[in-house]
Length: 304
Ligand code: A3P
Image (cartoon, rainbow, N blue to C red):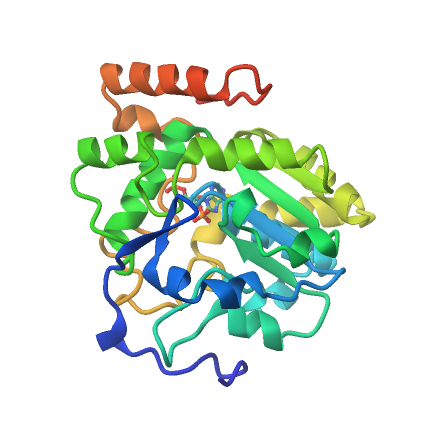
């Protein structure tokens, strides 16, 4: 694979909506399940930083924030490659002959920042053994589900989402790719008590990006001047990232991400769920949230 020119050829014929296969009870893309031992054997290094999320919780956003922090707030240095090449997505294993995040990660010199959507119990053990720092971002279930629905529509490698009502049912019972949102956010929430994990919320970053960027800087041991902080806030604002070809996934062909169906940088707000949920659906999700998260101390805001 040629990392400079980009990647192995993207073969459109190989791009199909994936089947789901359960691994330890979590539905995953069949390619990941088939390469499970390869992924589990991934060799983390002590200076790796891991960014972890349930899909559509603001992964790309925190990736851009972290990259800016790591590069002194210099946007040119963050424009060296698209997000998925700057920070390999290790649990993105594509059909033979196509790019695999695992391969990009293995070939990358240290220090690496790596992306994953894995549930806590599925993380390759080397990340725990090497005591790697981890940043987790969680987003309220309602907006997360809406964003995931539109992403299923436009991502030609994910299963067909069906209509919104069906999709939400699948979300509530954890039948979608990556499994239960509740288990994901809770598993990582509990893990933070025994591991260096910075647990952030999409809603908090939206409310006060400077405050949350400072938290990240502190976690990474990076000193920030006011000027650099201001530049990072501007560069990572939704409107900037929407038009940034290195952050908006426009580098991927429409045979993978069809942005004519729904743009990757879609709304970028807290509360878009109100355009999708019926009152009954909203109450039902509130009930499930109360049952699943009750007593954990983990709470979410669904509006600002
Ligand atoms: P919406 O679909 O609600 O717009 P991920 O990167 O985990 O796939 O998450 C994508 C979601 O984060 C999308 O949500 C996207 O618009 C939003 N997002 C990406 N960059 C953002 C930013 N700078 N500010 C706010 N939201 C952002």
